[in-house]
Image (tube, rainbow, N blue to C red):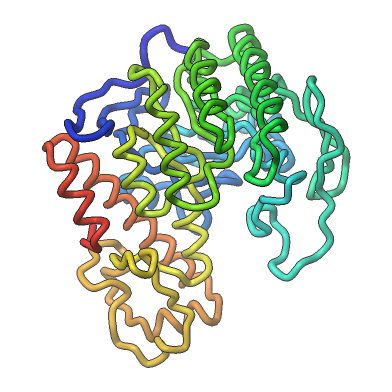
Length: 398
């Protein structure tokens, strides 16, 4: 943890909580607000590190849980740490593993992220016990019993050498009752203290530590959690857990939370990346976001386009595009669109699940999201965020 604030705010929007700034890390600066692509298993799927950087991204996210199980943090440390291991020289954030560990018990992790086949198959992983000292679970890889505690999570992230480590928390889903959410949130706060204590004694110099606000969809619990995390010496604050069953509720929960957070620390919204949610999140004062959306959609033939009525996406695997000579997205400056390929050809690649198509769609989607964030960031500096947000929401091309 650093003695000086990690975030320098360079501009604020007069009509909202939005702010632009620079997040300083041991491996470079991150221009905020920013989207963070997932490098779940030490790779942004289908992309080379240089390609991700060339799109304008400053930072990526590695998954503590998956890297713990395979290839193991000790091996990654022996091979020079996560930066050297995956060939990414910029900043890296690692999650705590809490989302993956607990979602095994609650059943909310996507099959794809867990490496399971899309048509079922034997599921070996699962929660064995949630205890004060930590969590016992079975590995989804081989069924072996494993254990993760707050200290374990911090030890793994220290070995990985990430620039930004998240504390271990329980990520409660929407369907658990209030009393369980309250008890879980209190335990998350105790685990926060243990994570910070471990990092104070053993953490690598320069590694930032973010606390995580929980509390489900209950306003009082969210506010209590925000106050507890803010009272700690963490370098930044993430917002996690269930944010509601629909967008309006999610935005309300984020609104409650950011209103209660201190202005001097960076704020990260975990697992959110839809275009309209990015716009609203920036207005509510979020500095960084992460989500599997752009890369996962790309691997399934879905590409992002300026069409809010269809959730900013089009499915190029559909038969309707078989004979289309339209471009992927008219006027798009991304490297994939610059090839001039038709939707007819791209539909063929998507339908055949050719790796070339998956790469092209992923490249386009990441470029689309980066341009959205860049426009929002520049608009904050120019004092035009309200107009820019309205344009994006109405379908303006980024």
